[in-house]
Image 1 (cartoon, rainbow, N blue to C red):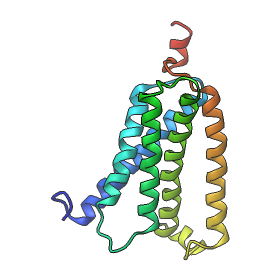
Image 2 (image 1 turned 90 degrees about the vertical axis):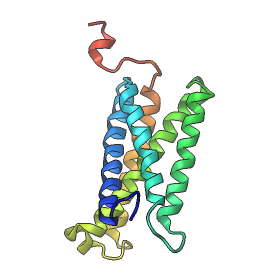
Image 3 (image 1 turned 90 degrees about the horizontal axis):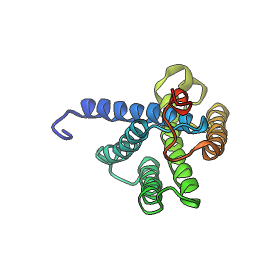
Image 4 (image 1 turned 135 degrees about the horizontal axis):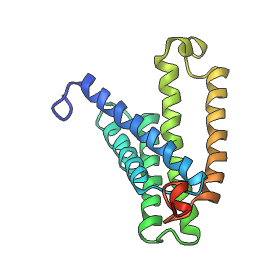
Length: 172
């Protein structure tokens, strides 16, 4: 029992939180690429991404795993984002640090999504049963390159206080 739930129910809760974090993160970063900003989407992304790591630590484990290490790294990166926002007020280099931290946290969640997909989806699992085969490496490489490009574009486009929509930007 975890938080009064069966392990299965807790796992479902963790996955739902993770997927909300990924979806809201994609929307957030997509908005930044287009020079838009939405505090609602960004807040949802940050809260659910933090909760993803926190709930991940609640699963029973006997030793430190790569997932636990990645969760620690993700929380450290999110802490940097919070400092960049609160202390740096997203000015100067703080803005770029904030964007890079948020994009990195989203990347980590997507990295885990790819790992879980190869473990749980039979067609993908058949291609890479141990996670060390070329299809898995190619998939992770594509995700990494996509996030590097998205991070670069988001950093160029992100402007704190920018309107949430194009029509708002045009004064409509």
